[in-house]
Image 1 (cartoon, helix red, strand yellow):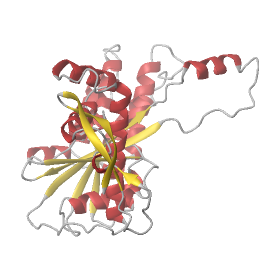
Image 2: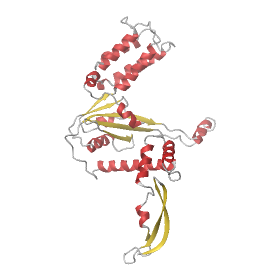
Image 3: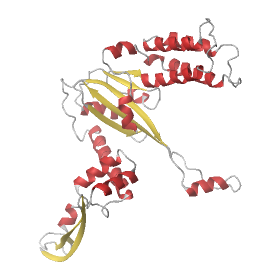
Image 4: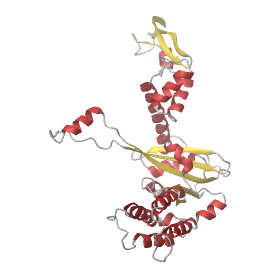
Length: 347
């Protein structure tokens, strides 16, 4: 082989941009089908033009901060003022995420074997939370929506712009945590992705695992379609927030009595105590009795907030009654009762 030409490659590192000479070589004529072709070995070896260390820092901080803030942080702490940009950081995050997703899909299809099940690996619980990334219309879309009432457009409105993210964190008995996540409706099967994650952690197929999640239906199909013996319980954090709403609304009516002649504050506290001890059906009856009191209607301006909060709480408990457990019993034994450990993964 002989050198045809030389050019310079700009390689981005944590110390800034580095210029590297890259020779362009002529292919050997003895190789069939390569006559007249040339190639650059260094360009083929450094296709990303970015060092692994810089790529790691970009993806790590972009996962915790907004893209613009992460870019400003890296420029402030490292001599990379001209080496990175907000758009480049966003592209790196997308590329790494796509690579991880492709690895998971290849493992599910059987192209990569799962690690052997570790009998010593005990997953105490898997906390799951979901979050929505709302699409913010551009200025052009806002202007089009503003004038569409006067000048209807033939172009259909954009659909499916919101993104639903499912994030989970597995808690092991040794204190270690592993995080997984995916975009809902963007994976082949949510149940298969869940089974794949547990297999990647070395959990035995017959190991019983508790899933702690809220009442959102995005994750329900994944649990129901799983081939593992999974048990789902309702997250106590979301239950407590429901009761907190009606407690604050009831503060405006200190003299209001429930049908059993007790104050509504005492009735709400009793319903919360019943739910904590696994008696969800009894708690629903107490909340319903306050909700159905004469005069407490949504049309009444003084009772509207209390009425709606009571309705939302008992409907939430009633529709998820099969997932209510004795939270006090689990709490005293150090077992997870909340998906708060997964909240950071969905933010």
